[in-house]
Length: 340
Image 1: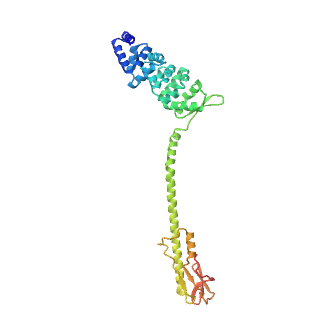
Image 2 (image 1 turned 90 degrees about the vertical axis):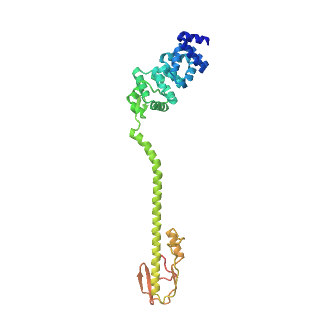
Image 3 (image 1 turned 180 degrees about the vertical axis):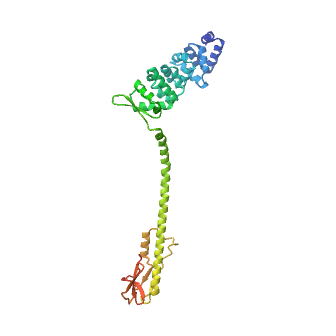
């Protein structure tokens, strides 16, 4: 400790000694090892004081580690930005500054961890570009880090083993920056030459999620509406058939009543009245069941007349034979009246 305090006193006076003592008291041995790796203790104290409180500990740990001297040299050149970059993304900050210098430090501190990993794979390739292309790529990354990182990830996934930032590929990217950020891709022909392939337009990209959402919402609504519609249609259909059946019952009763009034010698009639269909709780739903039900329960039965003539007339849809002053079913020998 005496060695460090003597050095701090020599380089920065009492103020540096006080600062070093406070730093060691807060962070212990990491502060001493960091001071041993840097070339100037006052410069270390100034850079540490410019960092947010939550980054001081990680920065001192990085300075005291195996790459501490490399980071200390970068701190001498780039100041607290170097410590901030390395403390934010350990290992990636040093690589970014080694490849892109001050721009690398500025890029890294603006990225999240996934973006830093994705861009970090291409740092050496970007550094090898001509100055104009390198500046263009850096500006593009600054412009929209998220979408550039997504583009880099798609390229690596779709083109394993290919280098993204070559001179020819970078020229294609910089000639179509908006389309690249909008989802465009770089593909290679059979000779290995890069070409740009545009993605669906803005309208398609906006419309697709809207259509998917509408499909999820509208299809159940349409299905429910169709169910209600066909349910109502079926209800009206059976209601109409019920009405027709009741009218048919009334017509049969009317014909029977007319036949009864005019019958004198055709024998005695035994009338079996159908139940009140409109109020019956046992009303059959299907018209086919209704027909079968009526066949089993006839409306009117007749005894065969003893004396009948063969003269006949039509009444509605039923043919009747004149029978000595009365009307009877024609051409039949049934024990009951035809029901349909």
